[in-house]
Length: 187
Length: 187
Image (cartoon, rainbow over all chains, first blue to last red; front, side):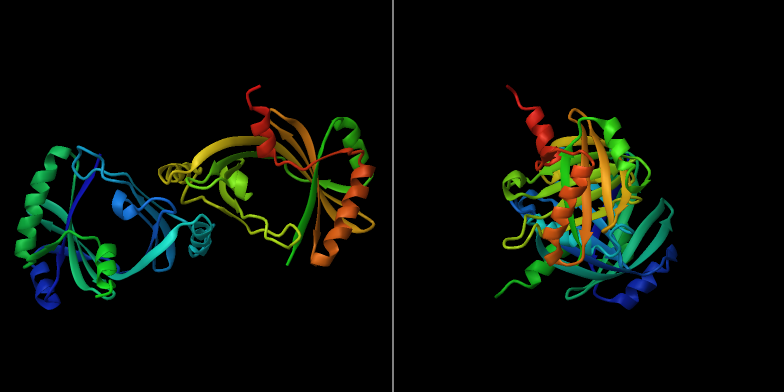
């Protein structure tokens, strides 16, 4: 089993971040335009159950994503499923209409421009993305993959070191969806 | 807008039915193996709302189908949606697992072997299928497509005439799902 260990940070200064990133061996991948439309359940509250359910569109290609509740007793283990809806549902509108008929409620759409990088240090490869979230600004996610559960704590420490070298100082534990919703709360 | 007008009949004698069908201009199409798994909603009863929601597999190819409640005041008008789930979900198991996580309850699977025919009489084309439903036996559906709502009554009359010529005497208004469920009720 593979574990993704990741941490999100606020990004204040894009230019100096890009400079710091170039100190690593790094390959920039293709920019992605994400539009993630989140849904709530007709008769339970995903915010309370800690589930996530969305139609994600990457450059218009529709996918469905479900993230189950965090499993008790395990380190960040949860069921995550994601797969493409096209070509049967070309742009996700049929799935969206189906969810509406079934009583699912559209919560919000998180739009981002994602710049993914494959990076490497002396310990091995890691991932970095620069996310520009509409209405929120810039964020960076640093991700390390590990094969064994026992390596998760070590990966967390390694991410902290990398973040320090990249000048990232403000970790953020909230999801983009939650931040977008908090941003739009009435005063 | 196109309307499907159709009627289901019990089939007692397959051999004499096939003989009667050959009196029409008729083309037999490829046999289909259907496995339709019906689901009920986590917090409303589709049997009461007259909705239908299923994963249909035709020769293993997965599709999703939703039929909305009958719209008030209109002649058998309801929203019907159906599309293919593969290749993103190769055999429908991911969608089935997702529905389970979302609290949908599997009701029953209706398995049938369908033999579809394109037929024609002096009034034009019509469709006929011979359905062998696992656990229930043989049925025939006769279907006429019309372009205008005003033609629906005429199509119904035409189906009755065709059914008479085919020796079909026992119309059946229940869905296969309902018949399968009634068959499995305890005494």
